[in-house]
Amino acid sequence: MAWLCRQLGVARSGFYVRRQRQDVPGKRAAENAAITAEIAVVLEEHRGFYGSPRIHQELRASGRHVGRHRVARLMRRAELRARTRKAFRPCS
Image (cartoon, rainbow, N blue to C red; front, side, top):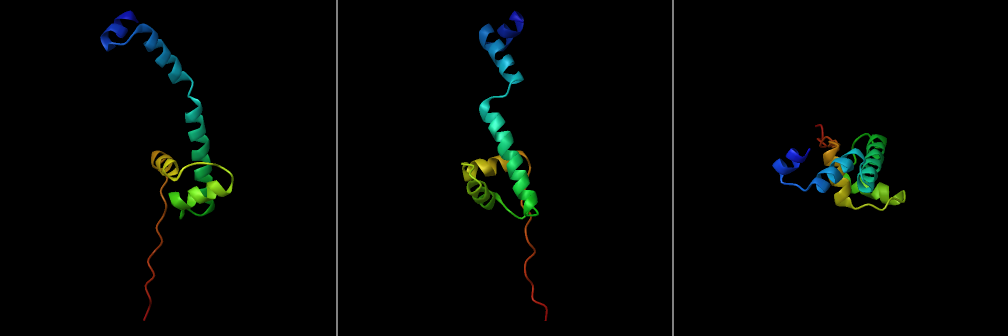
């Protein structure tokens, strides 16, 4: 492994710390996974019509303190998108 550390230009201790960190996700990553699961539940509950602002309101109402931009970012990463409603067209 010493040759790999020299090739990457990284200290040996830093290489092993990074490798160990990849095995166990941090607290923030675990929290993001939990929030993403809650977002998916809210989206399913409202048949996919709620976007990030409304989902943010739902999460805040349920007691989860999370920012709107974080909700939007997690939705993009999980590829969760709101459906758009069809425009109203009056029939003559």
